[in-house]
Amino acid sequence: MTAEEFIKQAHDQSKGKVCSKCKEHKLLSEFDKGIRHKDGLQYQCKSCIKEYKDNVCRFKKWFQNKKGRVKQKGNVEFTILPTDIPGVKIREVITKGIGENKYGSFNRKYKSWEATEYPKVCTVLGIKLDWDMNGCNNNSPSLDRVNPKLGYIKGNVIMMSNLANKMKNNATPEELKQFSEYHLSHQQLDTNPNQIGLF
Image 1: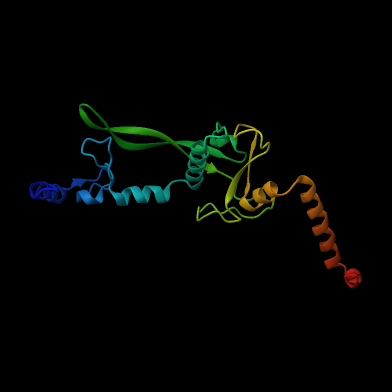
Image 2: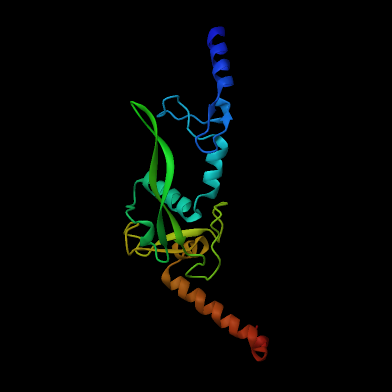
């Protein structure tokens, strides 16, 4: 970078721009790059974009991440809508934004959605689902394919916990049956003091 380019860049940074969301004048360094925008920067500042992402519907964020991961792998069909998952209801929301064409920028409205209802408890184990997306723990929501030979298609998905899905994937139906029978029989022994001496 030449001295002249450096001075120009410093001058541009000092000018800044107004965020379309909070309406505050901020330095250009407070805006992420936006290659499709005329000035090469996002319309909203980093703080406003972060606030939006932090407040976006947790189910919507999870669904979009799941869809993106499946499509990135490219080996399984993913054609479901959010409402194809049992227990999910959504509503349409309209958000305001700024568009741009060859004549300049303009205000526009975007159609989006958010979930009004979504599963809060694992259908298999009855444990509370953790939608905070803090990693893949046992309580994390997991979308199971009822028939693993088919993709994520309508009628073939159910929401459960990551723990339940791991149990299903790592054991045969017979093994799960044997485990259940073993566990239930030992629960009965634990509650019957007359049989404790058997062990």
